[in-house]
Length: 410
Image (cartoon, rainbow, N blue to C red):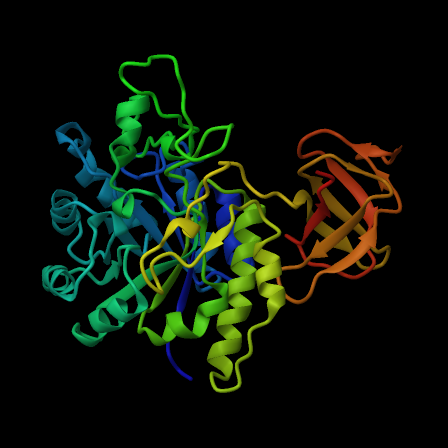
């Protein structure tokens, strides 16, 4: 099967960009320090952007830059110069949602590839044709579409218009992310990258004439999380997603950890490759679902793909994440002769811990940390300091960026 499918991963920082690419992403999307919708992510400085783009391009991967805020007049200042600069850095496409930003990008660099953000709420083929005629190369469809609707959009639009959909990550309770709740509740505009996520807060109901009497909206003494959606997960439905006619399969999560990005990307990479290799003989591997469940997540849903979500697609009793594993280290180097790995600590780990060793490709394996040494060569029982360098034996040869994780005690 020769169908071109692009697995697109979030890059909230330079390390996350590298992990996404090493673990199998075809492209990454990132935000600069301005004009994107993740103001509190570890957004890229221009120097980091250049390093990330060079890293991706050296491996044949692509980098897309988010400029998808809904801008006010003041946000337009300096935007043409910014577009010129990122164009020179080698960004492969810019993601926009606003017609004004679209026109600025077109004027500043007529040759720049433009992708339309999900923030633009594209839910029909007529809108898709409208944007395509203006010069948009790819449309990131609204999340409120079924597979049937996506297929119809594909059938009624030109083949050179690429379609992209979200396949994994947090779901916004508001329509395609256009939300005023954060501005009202916290004074932070979600449409300008500052969302406080009040949809995840705990709420009670108060009747006007009975102030101080807090009644749960749902029968639960702890309150209710009435806007709290499950996380999207389509790992079990790769054939249906691909056959709908989309080109880009997108993972949400620029605020997530590098461990999250790498683990989720790897699982989807394997599933996509297996399907493209032999669609007729494809069989879902339950291990892929097990893998994406080993990162911090809420309970899963298939969103709107198979119909409008119902009560079972919301979480009413908690806004907390399911955390079954801790990311404890990443391999920076491996000595073949001694079998000793140089590991950068990410969470406290102890000699005697049993860990899962997860390389960028292939199966993970389980081993015990028999001993550890610090940079001075001294034996240590625990690695307590963030990002400290430790040395330990690893039973098999592993490449750089291999991750170590440990089952959580919680």
